[in-house]
Image (cartoon, rainbow, N blue to C red):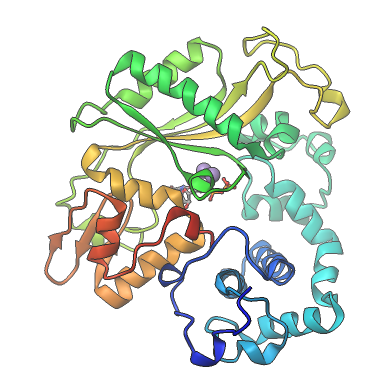
Amino acid sequence: APAEPLEEKGQVAPYICQRRTPLLHHNTALTDALETMAEEARFCGSDVRSLAFSRAASVLKSLPWRVKRIQQLHTVPCVGEHSQRIIQEMLEDGMSAEVEQVRQSERYRTMKLFTKIFGVGVKIASQWYQRGLRTLADLQLHQIKLNLEQQAGLLHYEDLNTPVELWEAEAISQVVRKAVEQISPGATVTLTGGFRRGKPCGHDVDLLITHPSEGQEMGLLCRVISILDSQGFLLYHSTHRNSLPSLEDEELWVSDHSSTMDHFERCLSIFHLGDLAGSNQGGAGAQKLGASTGSGASSLWKAVRVDLVETPYSQFPFALLGWTGSRNFERDLRRFSKHEKKMTLNSHGLYHLEQKIFLPAASEEEIFQHLGLEYILPEERNA
Ligand code: 8DG
Ligand code: MN
Ligand code: MN
């Protein structure tokens, strides 16, 4: 790390999208602690508090030097009082009693266990906790009603909480690409999400599907799903059939949800990734070997979460930017657009609220240009 820290010069920008945040950084112990606090706050329904810890963690990730003294943070933005207290504890004792207490608390551990079920959010997990449930077995014991998504989540719990590796993501991209090309030659499949940011593993695979001739993408996702299903690749899928609103529709830009919800046709799925041991065993009906050991290591196949999104070509750069993440990076990009530029940015486009015009873009670089921001590479968006 550079010997001379920047902090005295006040060079750390306030918005995440103005900073470069690499995957590997110099303050991992501190950011892990702060992220635990952010998660705990989220489990309590305190989104504002959660965001504060999350922002503090993000800023530490962007520092090109290791924090050694709390004074170094006095000119660094986004580190609130509570975060500073945690950091100070960590710097003095190598651990934070408050964070350790959270990690060991029954509520935190149970909430973590339940929210790791695909389809279970903080609200439901919290209800189960209130009812006295503590383990996955308790769900069956108490005959808790689960929707199809949650049932699939519980069934494949071990696999879905085993990190997806890059080669697995690429294998799945290839399977989808083959199906897409079979239906519509020229259509493309792009790996986004954490993998595009250079992460070696992730919790799911995020894929964008588009076609260079506008309109050709329509209905593509639906047909791809039915091919993949007939090939035995899908253990679960649920398609959200959105009707793409016209970009001329003011509601898309001025409503409170304008930048958080997108309107693409999308499919949440669980893939059956076969042949992990190089055997020819296939088909979703195949028996899972070694599943009872819980490690999954001896299994010949693995369940993997995959998000599929269909986007018109003209909106592709916006969708790519929106789906590459990280969530913290996206949130600040939209906040910056709104508050600093009077523009609404979402996965469909960029709209100037005062001039009432769209700012089209053929690449992510052009979107950053419209916003007057330096271009930040996907690998530098790991906030
Ligand atoms: P990981 O899976 O590797 O653990 O991390 P990730 O890839 O960064 O997280 P993710 O949960 O898969 O989310 C990736 C991006 O996808 C994230 O920046 C936000 C975006 N995304 C959703 N759902 C939606 C949505 O409904 N609309 C838009 N615009 N983006 C979404 O996950
Ligand atoms: Mn992802
Ligand atoms: Mn995803």
